[in-house]
Amino acid sequence: MSKVAEAILRYGQERSQYIALSDETGAWTYTELAIGIAKFETDLRALGIGKDRPVVVRLSNSAAWVVVDIAMAAAGYVSVPVPDFYTDEQVLASAVDAGAGWIIRDADGASDLMVLGRSLSIEALNAPKVRLHSGTAKISYTSGSTGAPKGACLSVALQEKVAASIVERYGAEYAGTHVPVLSLGVLLENTAGLYPVMLAGGHYKIIGAAALGLENPFRPNFSAMRAALARAGATSTILVPELLRGLMSRPEISLPAMRLIAVGGSKMAPELVLAARLGGLPVFEGYGLTECGSVVAVNAPGADRPGSCGKPLSHASVRIAEDGEVIVEGSLFLGYTGQPAQEDRLLTGDLGEIDDDGFLSITGRKKNLIITSFGRNVSPEWVESALLLQREFAQAVVLGDGEASLSALLVPSSPGVNKVAAQHAVDRANAHLPAYARIGTFRMAPPLTPSSGLVTAKGRPRRDAISILFKSLASQGEMTP
Image (cartoon, helix red, strand yellow):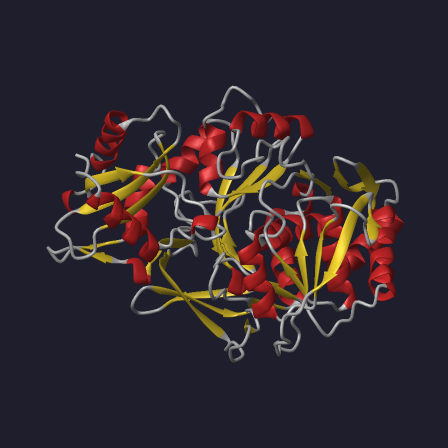
């Protein structure tokens, strides 16, 4: 049995009336959650679902998702969770790559089983069987690829080491009431949100997408999001930088109970963290990769340095190679589907530094390094973080390898941001950058989404694809300015 399932059983005995899990349909104590997990395991066996093939989990955030995930890990099934914003093509690609035998969905009509008041259906899949790495409990696809997705095979032990390290870093008192904003199909929300809350005996409170302002996940209603977090009495949540900037734009709605907002996914300027804190948001930046079970390092009260990603967690060993690449050793994933087993070290592809106090900072991506025609090296993430400090922009991607000056593809934060306003914002960002790292030209673009193939599920830009789009836009008209 997994340590998370054991903790739920223990809390069910020690604090039988304490609420462990809730969503819009109800609330369940630790005792009731333990019963729900055991019942789901029995139902799977009764339906003839074997453990020899992975099971795709395509569910929206709900208490049922939690039961399905924890029960499958505890009973020895292999799950393939997919974010609820994945397209049918992305889900199919993941299922085929994993050799999945079944898929669990929210039931549209007749249901195969009920899980904590929610109707679910289980359908057989015809994906060819794939040999998986021994010990695989979860296959995580974070790229959102529509062609050849890369599935990271994760053990229960790795995921729970990450979760236990997070509880160790923050202390069980931070378990409080955690409200997920990210999709539960994203590994970060599992290992840094759900599992630590269960290990520490907190309340995992799920709010529906519409109430959270995420009916359209790529055009969030941040007033609704802050109001929902306030009503829920949320003490913690996890965000990506874009969502943090959105929450910061609605300071009129206070979050008096909030004690921890963990943020990761891409580089943030120190000024953004400090501005968020001045606005009453207790933001702590972290760093991680799916191949490491998610979180590798994170800031926390008492061990905090804005601008860094914090100190590595106790389960992770991190060092910097001579060329500046971040290397993680020790607790890692088992390997990718269809590829050899992973060695005991991971070359992350990230460039970074570790200071004398042990704080890790990420300075950019090794393969993303831009070399201008003047021979200057520029990490695009550095310039992008300066652009994203400007309230006019929701997303920014910097290009310019081999060019005399840098260019940017900019996504406005609201329809009211025209080219004139964007130019003023670019000028403000340029004022804080050296001449060789300033933006010379830019184009405006609609939101970059995973379904478009331009960003990953975590919002990280696919630079090759964006470069092609940028050139296409440039050919349609003059660049700005």
